[in-house]
Length: 242
Image: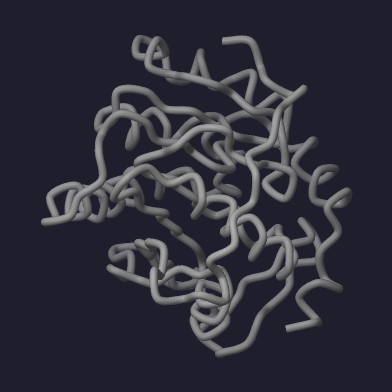
């Protein structure tokens, strides 16, 4: 997967998103019309996790790569007491409170950081990552997932919802400096991060011609001694005043 790292430039990705408007259509790459279908699929997935025998709590979640707060508003706030968010683009993160609107009092901390720089300082019940991990190099993605794993509350879950290639190999996008990984590559990364799948589901009802989208619920693999190391939480100079 070394070609993945060579295809990703963090600066180029930031420059790309700096030119994208802080709108629903902007953050979804012109596919704003699929937002409700996406949210409906995510709701079913999240509800199945929250109703499981060993379910996470509903006190605190975080929306990672939050954009303008689409997932924060329509998915996480209805299910959690408080929702934090992390987003590298300044104009996006400054839009979250107004986009969320009436329920903005349920927004917690806003971190203006890229995920390769983000080290959670709290314990979360659910850590939600969607359409953002393709901007991370392999080793940074593994390190990030380890930090997330160590930031889970009791019975906490990491959720990943991402495009997956049908070809079985990674495919690059030179325009926004991202990669789309294969299912096999994601499973390898989860294992390297000391995580195991407890649920996997494919998003339905999306239009033809776009990548398949998979959802994964991940928890720490207690049997994985090799990845049992912990990473100390960070401290921040990039917290947005809420």
